[in-house]
Image 1 (cartoon, rainbow, N blue to C red):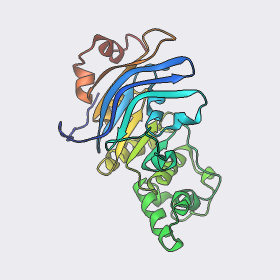
Image 2 (cartoon, rainbow, N blue to C red; image 1 turned 60 degrees about the vertical axis):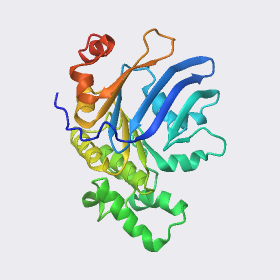
Image 3 (cartoon, one colour; image 1 turned 45 degrees about the vertical axis):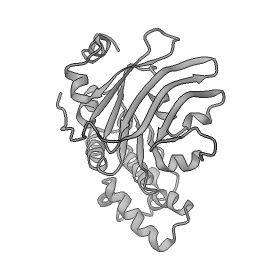
Image 4 (tube, rainbow, N blue to C red; image 1 turned 180 degrees about the vertical axis):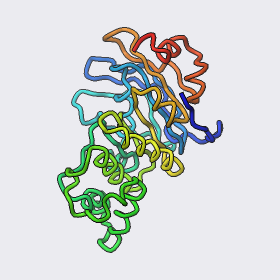
Length: 267
């Protein structure tokens, strides 16, 4: 495996801080006692076997789990020191600050231009500014050259990889501080995977990125930090086993369970 350089300093500020988080789907205890600090302007990867709570934990950060009846979170999650579950926090505004890219590309059934302009329009941005926002967002998503002459075409007409980058452009258009990526490369072609991995490296100078991935090589390539999650017994809550700089996780993990997973003994 090749590991990227990690210039993020040990004393870099935490963008998101989690303390003692337990998460429940009704009576099912999905996550237990999770505490971790997500560094600002870095790429953090969540790894672990299927069903170990990675995506559930990711969705806690922008409160997407709130949309599922019967769920609840205990403990604290702060964004820049503010408790995101505190009374008065607007989940809609939170989701603007913390954008999300899903496993399957989900462009809106409208033009490429309107997909990217959708969020800024809702914020009241004037038409005179939208053209620049659309172009800049598509450029940042490495999609402008491929779409600049077909902005009126339906976004659903693009290839899967292009659709995923269009979704990234749509998120970038509202200037998020954090981008959550839930297995964003699992349903697209290898060429697009490379473009999205390159994109993460470019974007981390401006925003904090958290990615869930089952691909160990991808985690090693793109992330500065890695967190390993595990549900040791079926039906019991998952735990955060280990969190460290990515090279340490992959070459000198402190926990035997991490080593067993990395070396393919299970999972």
